[in-house]
Length: 296
Ligand SMILES: O=C(O)CCC(=O)C(=O)O
Image 1 (cartoon, rainbow, N blue to C red):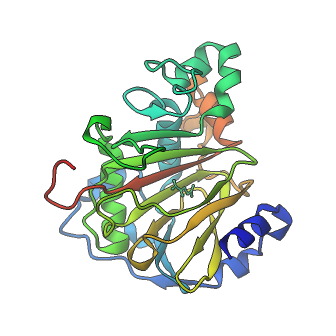
Image 2: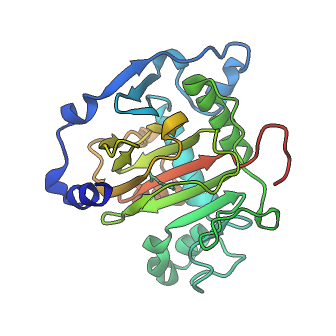
């Protein structure tokens, strides 16, 4: 069933109307967080006040939580910039070094900005970057030997979002940053490499939208539109659900663009804007260890 629906939704003509996509989203309350976080954490991470967040759970996929309106415009810009200018650099790993298109000590962004000829040949070839415990694409097994520091700001963002949306005390230890272009897809798969499969998986979307497909044990497969700034959380019965992205859909608005007075003016900013105006970025964050464990 998943493969059939995946093929169907690859065709942009088959994208359902927004009303159909939103029909099965049931509104939920946020969890109490008042003892856990200072108000400053929200402004430092450029998050809207939690009272402005909209939290939903999918009627047919228990544990699939969708959170909207988490980020301010500045916030969307901040995380997009982190993913474009900072994360594709050592000690993080990327898909281009193993195939010889980047040296292990090079930052993809620096090469794109400073060497236009070489840069244009790798601009849209960046597909993934890994942070923290690096995902091993062959063995699917994490190892202490393949671990680098996890960014503090991203860990704090995840702590806050997981606590408010699910009540979970989440510890971010591994991330895949996925980069998508107009015809990119990610086929159906289950994320089961993490020893701790009780912790939720957090997925942040920026830039173009994605039609996300998720299955369940009853073989229901549902499409969900993930727009820039949305957070999808796979928890409980949906943590091990089959999922994938058959179709990238051009964004209908650009909530990451800032006003002329407040930014987007340097050469670096222009690069980021040009990149995200034709791409989608997904920060896919996992907890690997059980609470209390420091290593595998
Ligand atoms: O891009 C997405 O929304 C999903 C990415 C994903 O499934 C993954 O990284 O495992």
